[in-house]
Image 1 (cartoon, rainbow, N blue to C red):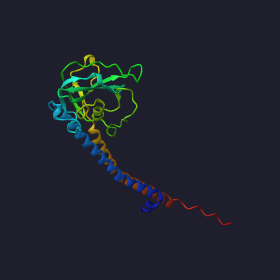
Image 2 (image 1 turned 90 degrees about the vertical axis):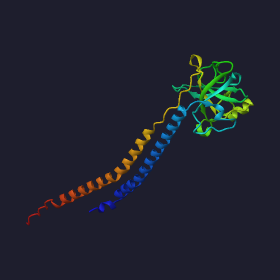
Image 3 (image 1 turned 90 degrees about the horizontal axis):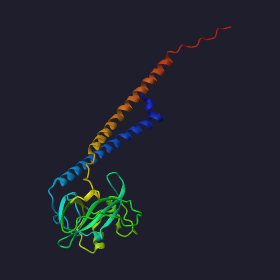
Image 4 (image 1 turned 30 degrees about the horizontal axis):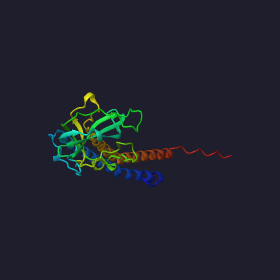
Length: 266
């Protein structure tokens, strides 16, 4: 009755179905793992942003690596900006994906240590990409700043190549170890994205808060893959039943065909 399943066509179709089922189940689990990761990250970011501000030196120090739980924490510091030694970070985009620079300015604390402050984005609209752009000055004198603590940037984490031979006072990555060597100073690990004081005239353009990752989409994809996995055997059985009915109908039609009349004898 089902001997047709041994045909080459049906053996291949069955093998494909058998392979698809575990593959789709694994893809569902992978999407669920991504859902859990993104949900945990969103929760961590939300807690960090809602936490009360703390002095920057309570979370970081020269040479210290910023942990996942410390990332995005709001910190405060008192000191002064050193604009004579600020640099720009190349190939950074604004909220509309326009390419420009991030302004990285050393902030000298009262004990002589340096905190790196990302003051925001400026456009790359100068006459040359090799010239140092014009940057609006920050407030002068001793002030208190507030910002979000961030870990050092690396090529491995960001995918940005740390190119050599760049124009003077231009860098590719915000890295406290590199800046400590350049400044010949004790630089706190990580850097701070400036929140306050806000820049006059809105430039440099402040860097927005980190957005939530769409974890619900991964959850929906996981359910979708598992439904696909469940549909494969159902679809396979439907095709088998249809093939059987078609073969039975063909055999019945052949059995009921009238026999040809024999020629009359001469």
